[in-house]
Length: 167
Length: 133
Image (cartoon, chains in turn blue, purple):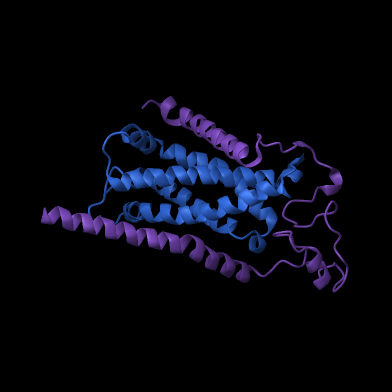
């Protein structure tokens, strides 16, 4: 069994990912959570997203290098899905900033977000949610394995072949 | 991978990629780069964070229903302003939680479940094919 200290980085990664999921849930409905909270969470999630990608950078580099060569289909799908999620999330965050009504004016900036950007924000944020569901599903076995490792539970015997490279 | 390549380079590459995505989206959608006039905000239109109340540059809130203007007429005036609520109109914490959880189950959970089932089906089918071969 791995020592407690050796498990800490893995646990913090799991906490970060869970925090991002909670943030995404808070972002779902600005009417329910309030526009100010919606905007602040949306702004805070941008650096967290960069940190999340930085943590997973070795996997990104590995897949990008092998993309032209033969890769398992699920890894290809996973990388396409992740790229799509990145693109749509960037659009959702930036368009959200451009139509800000609370956060940016509070910081001393006026942004003249047009109805075009409002439309882009609505469409992209709906796509973000759908792709996040798919992203979670594709990573589900990693999540289960990591939770078991962090909790110090023995590894579950895998019935299906799980690709190591897709992590 | 040295420390610089591992921790310093990625954020810059990610930011560069994000900038390209933004530029392409903006040119595709509006025909130009984003032109959000970033200027010092007009003090009269600034509202304190988390309050949900705008003082000016928005439709006036009619004072009917209650002392702080949270009546039906005010709600009608605010129609079309997503998430805009006046003080005292905040819905209960439990209802917010229920709404968010329901929506997340529908918008994140359902696509996630569908993807997971498809993924497991794909893996099982490949496993069977491998065994048969």
